[in-house]
Length: 138
Length: 138
DNA sequence: GAGACCATGCAACAGAAGTGCATTTAATGG
DNA sequence: CCATTAAATGCACTTCTGTTGCATGGTCTC
Ligand SMILES: [Mn+2]
Ligand SMILES: [Mn+2]
Ligand SMILES: [Zn+2]
Ligand SMILES: [Zn+2]
Image 1 (cartoon, rainbow over the protein chains, first blue to last red):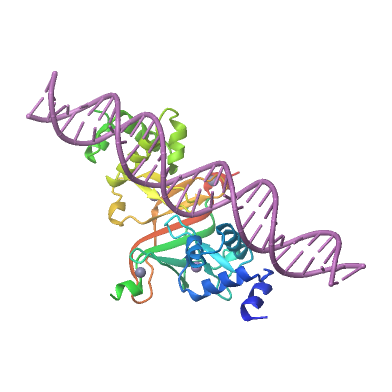
Image 2: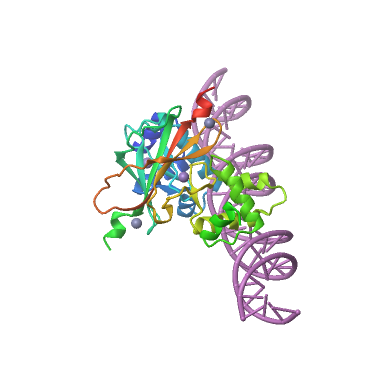
């Protein structure tokens, strides 16, 4: 049993060949990926399978879904200790308008916001748009 | 010339019958509206016309588009003094998971965030999800 | 009124998300 | 090992939102 297989198994996700491939693909990138990104990376893979794999990963806390404002859902592997399942890891995300990549800034938590009376916060999403470090270096 | 007509005219938008209706509809609501909401409110209206009207309104700074995480674009009238065109009015938005309504919290600005070295912020979007005041009162 | 310009209506398309169902694959128990 | 069963995958299809092209209609200007 490899490292990846153990990781999936620990999260009660059966480590099939496809799932291992997808997991490794996501681990190899330091940016969030869209369903289409994975689809293009594995020509022979079925979109539905990829779709359901991501859903399964999300339900089991292996990845978290990211809404970066592009209207295309992105996904990124959860870091060890990520409690995104219970909305306790509200780190912010950065979307580069130049290279169109989205990254997790896991060290940067969303600050607490005081809401008007009667409003109850349960979740939050903060996306900063701009130019990423790679793009600003050129 | 009515008040609404003057408002549109001031923003260089020709005050047609349809545009006045849409403006009044949005002004009558205290929540953000989706294209479909307007479509349902005016049975006889063409979806494309509504779509382009909203685009025009947005370009001219009459409304601003809101991404509340539902993957359905919402729009809300800009308040007097709103500088959303130049990303200078970064108020936050609240989306109620109970009634599915989205509101502008225009008094609540997005706090400044320190980004890692190399990252340049140009825009930001902060959405709080939870239960709104109306829904929490019941 | 003629022409120009803009708004509107109609049709069609694109892309992403999602579902139903048949088939294959993998785990389990005898 | 084979049969049973459940889960994963593949394929087809649908829905929804957003978007564009093009023809038509209305309005303003000269
Ligand atoms: Mn993240
Ligand atoms: Mn707003
Ligand atoms: Zn970039
Ligand atoms: Zn509500």
